Structure formats: C-alpha cells, structure tokens
Length: 401
Image 1: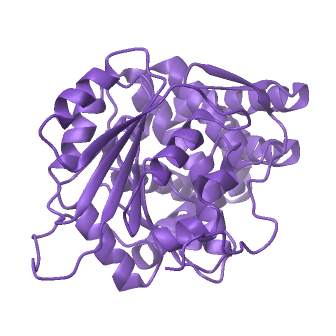
Image 2 (image 1 turned 180 degrees about the vertical axis):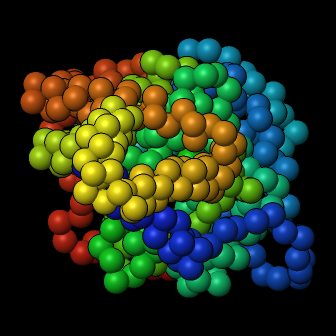
C-alpha cells in the first residue's frame, strides 16, 4: 500500500514535469501589431440565472484588446436579473447582442442548447465559448488566437485560475481537480499520438470550420460534459487541439459552497467516465488507497516491521513519501492558480471524493435522472452515452468556406 502511494505521487510528479514540455502557459501580453489581419471572433456566453457573475464576465469580454470580435449572450430561461443586467451593459455596445431562449428543445441539455443557439447567430470565423461564472484577461482572445496559429491547431482551451472563497471550496476543489487530471492528463491531451482528449467548457476557442466539421454542439447535445465531447471530436478528427495553462488569462469561481461543489463534480466525473461502473470502481479504488486513512494505516503497519528487518534503512520509503507530499500537492495547486497552503486540505477533499464515487455508482446502477443547474432531465440518465466519437467525424458544414 505504501509503495502504491509512493508510485501514485511519482506519476503525479512525472505529469507535472511533462507539463513543462507539453502544456504551454499562455500569459497576458502587449497589444501587438494593429496592422495584422485578425479574423472575426464570436464570443458566446450562455447564462442561466447568473445575476451574481454576469456583469464581471461581460465586462471582461467588452474590455478585450482584440480588434475584431462580437459578443453574443444567450439568456437561457433565466428567472433572475441576468437579462436586465446584460441589457444595461449592451446599451451602447454595437458588437454585443442578446439572444433569449424561452424553451428547451427535447433531447438537449440546457447548456448545449444555449451554445448551439449562440453558434447559429454567430458570424465569426472563430468561436469562443465562455462560461458566465468566468472572466478573461483583456488580452485573452488575442493570445489564444495567436497560440492557435503558432501551434497550428483548430482549438485552444485553457485551465483556469480557480477562485476559492469558502472553506469547502478550498477543501474540495483541489482534490476533485486531481481526480480529473488522473482521467485526462494534459500532456497526453496535447500529444497528437495519444487518444486522450478533453476540453474545458469554461473557455475554449475553436475555428468555425472545425466546429462545423464535428457537428458543433448538436453532436454532443445530450452530454453532461459537452466540452469534453467537443474536445474528443476535434482531436479524433485530426483538427488539432491545444490544452494550455491559462491561469493568467482565465479566472473562474466554479462552484459556491459544499453542496453545489459535490453535485457539480459528480456530474462532471460521472459523465467523464461515460457512466461506466467498472471505470468508477477503478478510480474509487485508487483514491481509497490514496486516502489519509490508508496512508496512516500503511505507515503503522510498515514502520515496526521495517525497523526490525532493515534497521539502517527503514526510514527511506517513509521519507520519500513525506517529501512527495511536501512537494507535489503544493506544486499542483500552484499550477491551478490556487494558494499552495490549500494543498493541506486535500486529505479532507479526498474523503468526500471517495463518497462521491460511491454515490455515482448508485446513480449509475439505478439509472437516476441527470440534475444540472436546477433542472432535472428525465430523458438523460446515468447510463453510457456517446462521449467518445464512434467514427471519424465527417464534414457537416453547409457552407463552402
């Protein structure tokens, strides 16, 4: 058990080192050459009851230094002040329009439907999708477009700087992000030879050609993790995908408080595992072995016997384990823009992660209805879906461009 724990963190260290090579960090930069020919980028923001965050999100887009963009906000059946706040911000902005969705089309999740509606109203050669609980640095559009050109890819997506305010956000978010990184190691996502693919729906930039070729959000209309589905289809189609560290460009408060964090990550992790019980059980076993109770138990059983068998070297493995815990979790947090001290709470977050996996198994076995953002989708159950593209995507674009 102790050897497994040492191995787990060693793999994590290897992943962090590989990230230095395979996961570029995109930072804010100077305005650049204004004479350069920039394509139109349509920024699409889906908003469902986002009155607390929509102002900051919209303002971050309107302040972009990119010379040619439009903002499309899709008011998705909001019942709060989202629409009026957005309308106030749009009053003197010629490149800002608001689309209202009053009814959800059957067979779709709300977010995919809103993004599809926004995409159909967009005029840009490139599309940028931004969550309403996120905000951008003023150079984000330009830097991401330049990264797409530099790396010759059709899609750029970012990991954010997480804004954590409550105790439970600080305790839970790092542990759940670790679980996600085990599922989708970013060096493998960026490796063209690896089938591993993902994307972050908080923000991604994609060429209109690539978006149409994979069928846009229509192809992922029933997925609870539509962003991962988009990333998988882009990479499977050979269109080029870059997952960059965007902690200097993208800020997000992903969830607020205890209950919403657990529910949100349950949706993400179960969808990411395609609702397959065997996959959930495998990851449950990994995180049980990495739990604080397992660590204490393994040291309790190992140290007395090792001191008898190896009196001069018994401390080597515990020392390696201790050094890994001192170095790797804080480094991982720093890559997410999270204060290193929050890594001390990962042991608590791990226990709730284990509980989440157990509940996921129950939901999959019982085929519970998907619940998301206050909506219950009776037609979308916890059962395998088309997360992975079955065949190479064909061109569904209706235009000749």
